[in-house]
Image 1 (tube, helix red, strand yellow):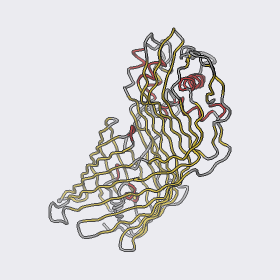
Image 2 (cartoon, one colour):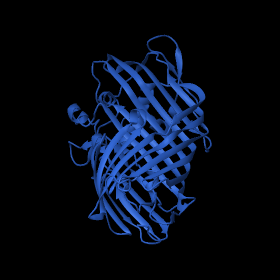
Image 3 (cartoon, helix red, strand yellow):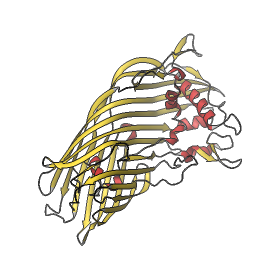
Image 4 (cartoon, helix red, strand yellow):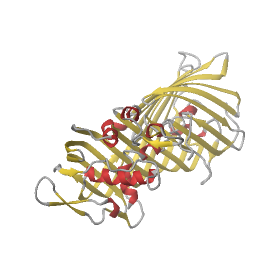
Length: 474
């Protein structure tokens, strides 16, 4: 099954096309934003209720986050118009490598809400959500790109190469409650239905050059695929080149999925609180809030495992990958050949099946908002967001200005800085009685390729349509 082998190939080139998103942090301080409870379950809503309709973009996010993008993989063709990959022989080693850092990361956290309902009752504000979520994380060491670009008479040490992807359905029930004039708290319980996950970790891979095109490799790598009906298929027999005997290696062309269905389940909670310092008699117009989201796990069943047990084997290198211009040497051809090389390089063997549990990545939001006493329709906010997810952990600080000149219209602009650099965001929220449309970006798209793919690795787009009921309470 070619898609399984793409999990390995993405580590070198196709990774640059990864898609990511998150909640629309640009709208965190907007009272008329119906999906504020996704960022802090303590948040109230300024209408009596709202609902979204399945298959309309009630809340849809898509984008890219990381420190590597297409502009690092595709460079201007030195022999003419168009772009070529960094592997092209006319691209110097120094030019090819200047866009890569020690650890090159790409992250995804895609959310699509199929159904969402919010209403006041039972002494507070209640929400019901049903949606689909997915995450993808890539951690690519500098040495991976170095050895694919050229072979040198030296040792290579690859460490912390990782690919992690999972998808699940989510059903959430939330409630927020005003406990006194100054304090409001909230919580959401979520049932998680696992669709599937895949993980590749290369903790260490040592490559020793024996001659120009012959490497002796020794590594420690593991791979897990938790998809219902998945199997590695028939393995291929390989001969040890440094000692007598043979071993069985997974052939990713033979991997297959013979059915579809859920493959796990779990539970998660969101917790949040808001403190109005003005109503506490401390500072008029100041509010402080905090939330811990996605604190939970999924237990996966029937997980197919594979490993590299550390035996030495001979790897033929990357030099025969076609990178010249002309027929038969398209980017797809290069990807296919690179897939084969990476599969041989990691050299995984079938490890049987097992049950596995893993978290979905907790997020901490901490916000401070100040509304001007002389014009409380204008407020300024500072939001700190931290995602805790092992080697894919990241942080961002975002300062924003938001104005609501009339009760059915809100607009905001913000600046962010964090793990993946600086960004500019904006949001427009139209919510007259009976209809709500919002558009926003936490990161501007910038230049895009002819295929519509952003060249930068930090960009997103958010859109939503829902139907609020009742008059605004503000």
